[in-house]
Image (tube, rainbow, N blue to C red):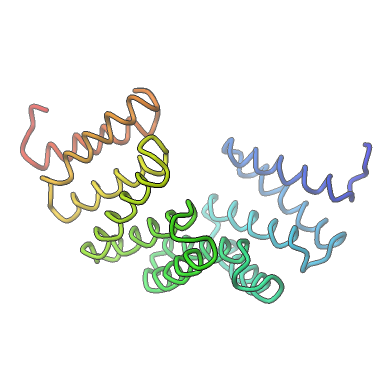
Length: 239
């Protein structure tokens, strides 16, 4: 009404609204808004504008969340190529798109491609952001998840162990990323059949989730369920 629909601030606001719908789980509405925003950004700002590339990444992410891989993968691939050409490999948006594409490859079960891209993303983030940046820690966590999914549990455990230590030291014991790192390591130990290491981590993780998030939080309930499964696997049916 004040700035008109083609004003850059209007385009930004539409993107924020689309993101809010996505967070609320309304993927259909989010997709519609992102598609409209992308078309307007391409027309008003140009296809190579950083805001246009950012919306491309966001739209691909909604496609992925909706399970629409036939649209998500080509859009992530095209956006990554455009970001590399326009912004350069070391730009944070380029690295973020690269990370999202690796996540998509993991979702499809293409572990070889996902590991290769996650490894490159981790190296890029260590070089550009530093080894202790939260995004770097996320990249190491996701690389570990990919190794575990591909059956390379020994490598995965080593990466998860380093990630938990770094998260505790850099972010603190109460940070959500630290809580996730502990549960991921416990899950990896359990996957390797090492319940003696998995169960104490699950127990500490549950205590932390209860203290920080509360007993009714979905993540707390997930950790409690994982701990119960570990007790059952260990033969401790009473617990």
